[in-house]
Image (cartoon, rainbow, N blue to C red; front, side, top):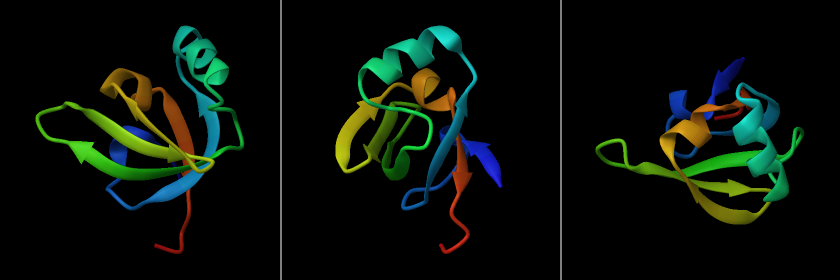
Length: 78
């Protein structure tokens, strides 16, 4: 099942399938967030504050808009 990172709960992981915004995709890809990368939602900040993600073992924090542009194929294990 494909869904944006902003639509999943903490602890859920999956592989990046695509990006919905080309401008944000360019920024994320320079940071190493690439299609096929494994993403885990570690923590979601309250009050729409942001997302703490682990991308291929690297911890990073993103704004809601940036995280929302990442579409992942959610692992069905969890």
